[in-house]
Length: 125
Image (cartoon, rainbow, N blue to C red; front, side, top):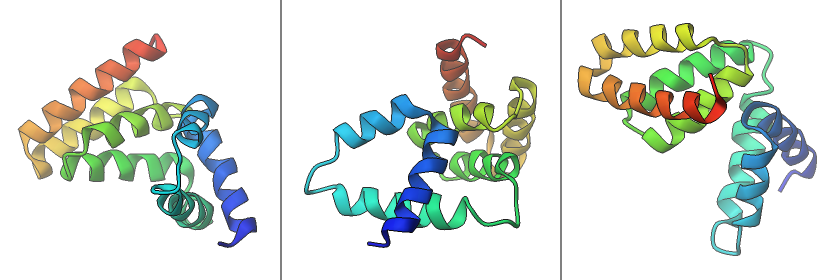
């Protein structure tokens, strides 16, 4: 494991997803899933999210779109929270999800709207 890249990744992960989520994930890490958690922190958050080519706001828009297309509601909810932390408004998230309805299908977009509403309620927005 590249310790420096891992630490950079954990910093970004905390900034985007919040301390509560990252702490909960760390608490639930064991010998079985530790390699996956290290991979995600190091390469996803350390390598990709730190690249200079796109800002975090844009990366959040991409994630919301892709997670809707892949119909991954649990990850989508996580990244709705991240999108808010990265400066997207509730209205902008709605626009992203409306766009996905055309290209990914209405059922997938409806599922994402449900998940987003759940997170908005939790966040009080």
